[in-house]
Length: 218
Image 1 (cartoon, rainbow, N blue to C red):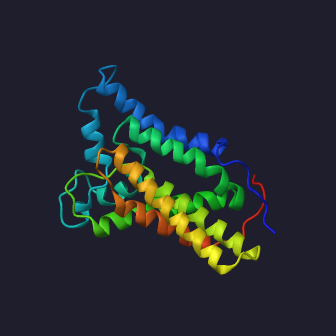
Image 2: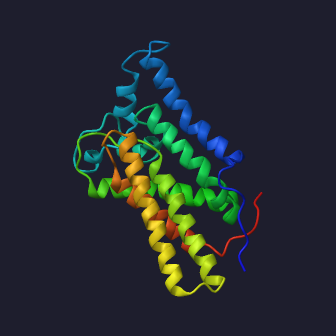
């Protein structure tokens, strides 16, 4: 028997903490874009020093020693603009409660970090684009991948017929495709599908390695 999770549309404290960490850099850069503080070159500088440049893994000259490593962390705190950020914050608010409810804050952060790094690694492996990759969507697709794993596991444990489970899995895959399309639209055709793929696979793998989850969360 499965237990229904709390409504995934209600952000919890962890959602707010992550949302603040993701929003602050964009707010600072947005203010600089409009001349409220700083300088107009803050955004290109942030992308230059903090974005994920696949070329740095293939012989490009870094801006500073160790940039090829630090970009695995910094890229997710930058976004392509307020629309990109708002889309990711909406996905964060929707997915965080359901995943955290099943595995608690420690399990949630393990999935988040694995997907954050896995998305960057897949982008670095498969992409040769000259532009930087930014945004937290790799981690968010990791949450989506983990949620799919948890839901399918719960349905199988509840005795759902394999055929219906396969149909559910196909529906979940369609949702991920639609999320990609939405992200493509928000970024005006610039889509780091490699990051989404790596994040979803990493998040799903970590979720599959976890136990059956638990009710509630600390």
